[in-house]
Amino acid sequence: MSGSLSNHIEQARLARGYTQEQVAHAIGVSRPTYINIESGKKELTVRQAEALSSMLRINMDDILGVADGTSVFSDILKSTEKYKQMILNALKYGAGEDGKITKTKLAKLVYLADFIWYYLNASPMSGMTYRKLPRGPVADVYFRALDELEEDGTIIREPKGNAILFSLIEKEAPSGSLSDEELKLIEKIGTAWRGKSTDDIVNFTREQLPWQICRDGEVIPYGLITQEEPERVYGTIQL
Image (cartoon, rainbow, N blue to C red):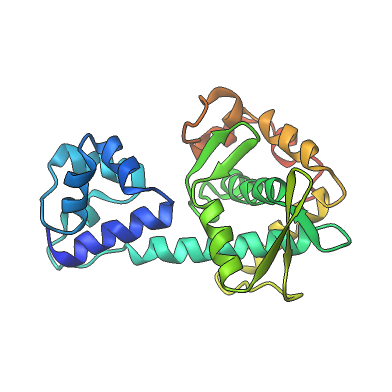
């Protein structure tokens, strides 16, 4: 495996929020073996490449290499940046009058943006991987994205009882990767849920089919949302 391809695998893993140990377990190798794969010192078998493709949601050609040596891994990094912009705009439109929002509620607003967009367009807004967690669906990369946004000086967090609140440092949120239609949907979702509690939105997402039929910790396929009735997808959102 070429050095560039191994570097791309590492970038894809980090973009999805996985540790080396998690990926190693998923493809059936030890962590030291996976480290050698990621560093380009060991080749992947076809079975391992298929497992890696499924976990990181990337094409087999990008793992095994294509004839001209090109790759689309940069798209994954762009998707992560877009996901961060979704977070910032969901915070902007969904925060309370004090400009603050709980970490859990913010995660659900971004989830709704991705899955409602999929319901309308047959493709997600960010393409991030979501899992069934006790407090509703959450993207694998969500917590790391919050850490990076805080480190960048874009958001600030503060504890309040058992909750963690986030607020924007600047009044405006960057949106360069989001289309006007995507921004409008995020605004409508945030506005609809702004006056609702964290428990309200958690319960709404847990009543949806994607959360109901998946097992704890399991990846939630986007396609499951298309089997829901519209009112259980949109709630009170006026599209």
